[in-house]
Amino acid sequence: MKIGITCYPGVGGSGIIATELGIQMAKKGHEVHFITSKVPFRLTIDHPNIYVHQTDVNSYSVFQYPPYDITISSKIAEVIKYYNLDIIHMHYAVPHAVCGILAKQMSNSDVKIITTLHGTDITVLGHDMTLTSAIKFGIESSDITTSVSNSLRDDTYHLIKPDKEITTVYNFIDENKFNMVDRHNTTLELKKRYGIDKETKVIMHTSNFRAIKRIEDIIRSFNIAVSQIDCVLVLVGDGPEMNRMRQLVIDLELTDKVIFAGQQSDVVRFYQMSDCFMLLSEQESFGLALLEAMNCGAVPIGSTAGGIREVIQHEETGFITEVGDFKKAAQYIVELLSDDEKYKRMQQRMLSDIESRFKSENIINQYEDLYYSLKED
Image (cartoon, rainbow, N blue to C red; front, side):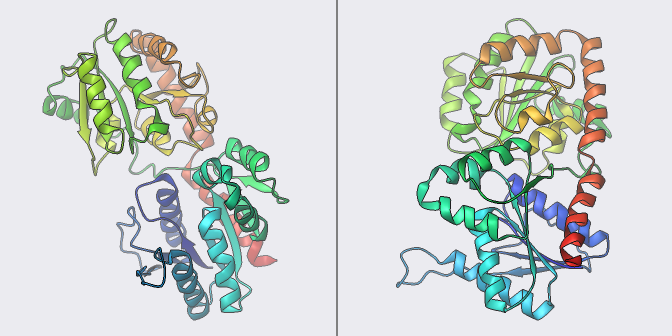
């Protein structure tokens, strides 16, 4: 099959999943065309079945804002016609599904459209009444619409009310990259680099440091737990909340216990060093970083937000607490990290559950089956 993929090319979960999916489809023999504003962040391999079509979004005095939507639609239409694509896979209902629909009309093609909802297009934009009709149009006019979690699917039905079946296809990770291989040596090396004692437990979080991630709750829960167990908190990433979080750490007198590691190109090593990964977000359609950390051996503590409840099985593969309940999260930190035998049992259940429900081969096959079902119509 000839498959076109349009996504945001940055470090967010939607771009990562779209890129990894395209790579795996190329390895299965399909011809894959990425149609994006720049080369996707995770596209680090050179594969003969992968083509990248980059579009430049220019500014014109006649437009108040650069015309991204029109520019990307034109590029998608161009690739559809020139390469005779069978499928275009649009990641996000707005703008990409709508762009794909316009591109199909511009190219006068019978190309099939699959749209994947990732979260922001529904949980944030879906509350904007000026965009609801566009989101609904993008969903309903796609041949197939998928969601990365049941929670996001249900939110979509509630907020947008589309007359369209939405199929849940979970996110996945590259197990060849995110795993426990050499976890012990990596832990020793990074602990030495950051001056962490060998026996000290490591709690980790990584994100874009937006307010919605509620990093303050992580720091406050850690502040309670650190008085009961020997642990440090490692925060990886950067963003709008960084300065406020640094000040909070100073105010709580935790500067010797909290490490701000900044942006890291190889976050796998930090996952492998970690005993516990925390994601206490206010909204989270899935939580891809959560799954990455778990497969590297870090047992999770998450909030009840969105898809987190589907990734973590409470008290079996990790712990879940209500959004904002940092005191309960602190209790779970202590419970998890003060009993090594209980920790090992939970970690093993966690790894088995990931293998069972989120194995990349199974998820990729689900998408491939959807592609074939469209091609056969």
